[in-house]
Length: 285
Image (cartoon, rainbow, N blue to C red):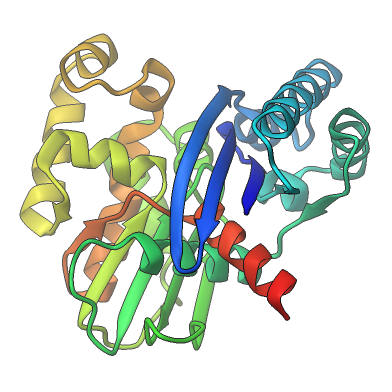
C-alpha cells in the first residue's frame, strides 16, 4: 500500500510518500517547501494573505505529487500553525481547497504520539523498556515517554520551537533563559534511552554526529555561534533557512537533554512516518 502524508509545519511543508508492506515502511518520495509560517505568527499573531496563498499552492503541488506517485490514501495536516495562528480557520480552508482533500489540525498530544511512533519505527539502536522521544519543531516542542512496544504514557508539549525562539529573543544567553522559563514545569519520567526527531536534531547531527549528549550539544552550539550561516550551509550541508534558526534549535535540544538526563539519538523518522503507520492501523481496524 502507498500512503501519502503532507505535513504543514511552522518552517517547512513536507511530503512523504511511503510504501508499506507488513511492518516495513519504505520511503518512496520526499519533498519539501520552505515557508516560515511560524515566524509570521510569532511577529503578528496571524498568517498573511500572501503566505496563506503560498502555503495552499505548496500543499496542492505536494498532494499532486503524492497522487501521481500512486498514493492510495492521503493524510494532510497542520501542526502548530493550525493551533497558534489567529486566522487558522482561513489557513485551513485555503489548504483544504487546494488539496482537494480533508485537512486536519493535530493536537499537541497527537503530534507527540505520531512523532513517538515514527521515531520508534525508524530507530537504528536497541530500545529498552522505557524511552523518550523529543521533537523540536518550529513553534513547539513535544516530549513523549513510554514503552517502545506501546503508545506513549506521558506526553508534554511546550509552545516554543526553533522559529519562535529565534524571533522572540536575540543572543544565546537570552535564548537559554527563555527556554529555561518555558520548560520550568516540565519534569519527565526517568528514561533509559532518548530519541530525537525533527529538523533541528537532523541538522545538529550533521555538525556533531547522531548522539547529542551534553558535550556534543555544547560543541554544536559553539559551531553555530562562531561560524556564519553561509559557512554552516556550505560546510555541513544545512539549508540556509535552517542555519538561521539552528542556534535556537540547539538551545532547545540542550534544554530537553538536560531534563531527560541521557543523550539524544537522532532518528530519520518522525511525525510523518508515525502518520503513515497510524493510517495503516486505521485501515486494518
